[in-house]
Image (cartoon, rainbow, N blue to C red; front, side):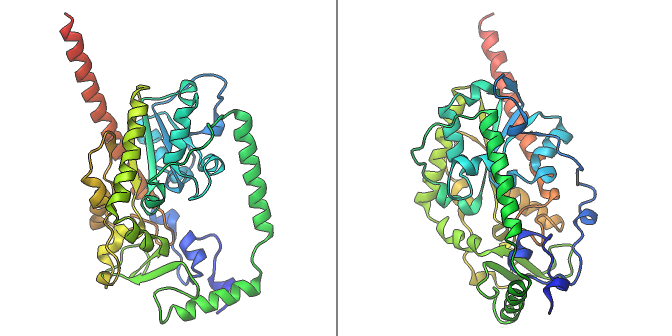
Length: 356
């Protein structure tokens, strides 16, 4: 097999990292044609001035699931529900919070220690965090206060651009790629993973994607996290951090909405043909039982419902959810915001009535 023919570098992260062949095109533009937006309608932190006060309906802080550009849930919040949204770019998180690709909980805590929310006003903060990293984000470290300026943000973006260019110039040679491609696909004939691969390919009970295959791909980190996130003490500590962040935001008149991004493994676990041979994910069960001072979106239940109705809730070749799911998530966020507004307006009317 020749990778120059079968292997494509422009496909999803799982397809590329796992060195999977592409015999049939998975045409995302066609599959998601009813949902794809052609431009980004929300703002990134690097697009606003921090020298003056700015106001938004929603500020979003998260990892890669909150940084999918035109396909992000923020874009649908902006377009479908006319919300002014500011996203704190993941590049900035990774610069200030080392490890774990930037911890959104840690970053929000450090923003609360700074003067950020005196410069950027909002009624809601949507905090997103991927399921597989919950165990690593169950404690905060003591760090310096963040001092964000337009100059520091510009320097971060310039640095990342230069770094990406260097990585492109260090691209893997044809022969190295050919070796990895062939070894991975030979091993995959006998194992769930390829040769020294960190991507699983498991059979499913029926096709779950618009691709002629009864397979689901996912990172092995998600399988490992299913075991780690079954620890009640760790999940309780994670929830306590969220409650503390919510109290601190409430003191500034801001409502915290927590948006956990389910692992692809968790969403499709029940459809794996021999799923009993793999650890069952319990994170959402454990988190759902705990007391919360924040507004919680049970994304796992929402996406479970979507998977029963349709294909392509997550991307076949990638670890992230699809534009279909992103649009559903945006709708759920808006429902929570509307519910909070109704409760707040009712409380204000009762208080006003008491003084008549």
